[in-house]
Image 1 (cartoon, one colour):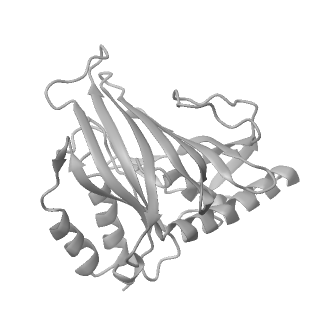
Image 2 (tube, helix red, strand yellow):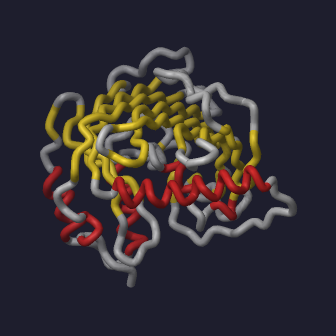
Length: 292
């Protein structure tokens, strides 16, 4: 895909830990429990595959869909993978259908990605992220449009790069199919560490901010909001989680996204839903390159 205009990409980097002068002990306890929940979420969902139905639309400044090529519907399998030697899990989107047509080279791509891995985990991770973004449309290239992405900010090893505070602002930025859960604490976050987790290729840091809807006692995360913006682009990704029978952690139910290029108002919108949660039959983390 041609990468014209802003580029929002996840990079594997050593993030700066920011120390807090004062902390609210109640808030701190909630964030700590949420961090432990995220680790368990990743571990348990690493054996689960979900089917993703994903519609993306590219819109011109007047709000009309760009034609041709301004609408894309994808069906994919979504799963969590953990490179050997890595302490983190990452979401992977395996697209098997685009606009009702089968993706023909899927098996060859997966063979190269997992069975013929690259020499380093960092390179392998970037290949996984690029493959997950392969069929995106619009004038903002991004590989951050994966539902668990914002949960990375709550991982214990990443929390130090963020400032957290409680807020009474509860309304989701994007119109979700159901409102955010009421029995939650809403926690605002703002990235302070550098380099930032999201980068605008060639233009440097893009700090993330947004909100998390968290159950205070359990630490369960029921909704995430990711905002990222600079002079080039504004981005918003909202993800709603729900209970699924037979699966312990909450699972993604819906993801909505919006990106706008500031200089001309072109934007991309998307909505994804998740179903057919099932056990994964192959341990993918044994097929990814170890750290060299």
